[in-house]
Image (cartoon, rainbow, N blue to C red):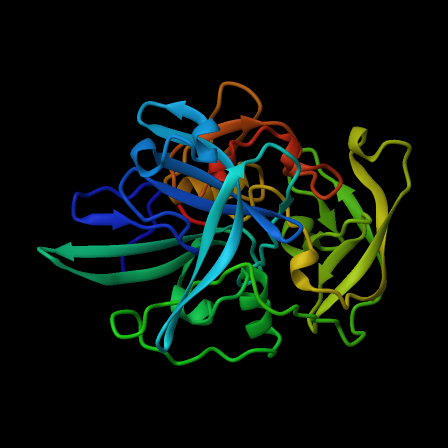
Length: 349
């Protein structure tokens, strides 16, 4: 088992991207799924110009050397070949509008995690070496086998993880990967509803902390609040399913004071599709270096230092960036306004 590393080096390791293919994978061409708009999805694309014709709409993307980079609107497409099928995307055109962040589940109670897939290549033969998920917990990094977390059919990350957790789906026993090409979790499929049965009820205080993540009751909101609905209600993860909750402030401006700034009241089980829940931008890899995380991050090799702002790291990478309080104050604040580079809105490190 390889130890967790902020950066993996070595000429014999090729890092591949988790998720549906949107362009043929090459060393300098890829795309990452980061959000959705209606029945379309938004990807961050980095494509070599020679893969496109002169009249291709993507030629309007920003050029950086030989590559075109930027946000692209994409349409899902299923390719069927005999008993196998693959989910791919048609890249349609550049996109610079609003998009809803993907629903990102907590794993093992934590929504600080990163997926890594390593492939070893020997001569002309390629085979999978590891599928691992590294989860940042209170004072350590816990390593999970990726195949124990995700089912083997196309499904969103929230449907895959929460469906298994609450018993709605069963992970297929499919050997990976040469005989049966692995079907990564995807953003398409039937709606999935996971309403709680009533065990979570009442009101919970919301506490804004000067040097830590927002708390809801005794939990960190980043982990326990799955996300926000279009109308502003919060969706909370309970022990038996999902619940809708409404935030009520008890101070004039909750984002200008510390301590208890309001409360959330559980109003009913959430019966909608889990993918209608917008998780925070940056989840699950983006982690603020604050009192909740600093010990675990530094012990894993991350450097929690920036010239200005609150240091934040992306799990699986050595760099740190300085941001404001949008991440630690979520869901009172919106991390999408923190000027996070779209290329970093991915679960793969």
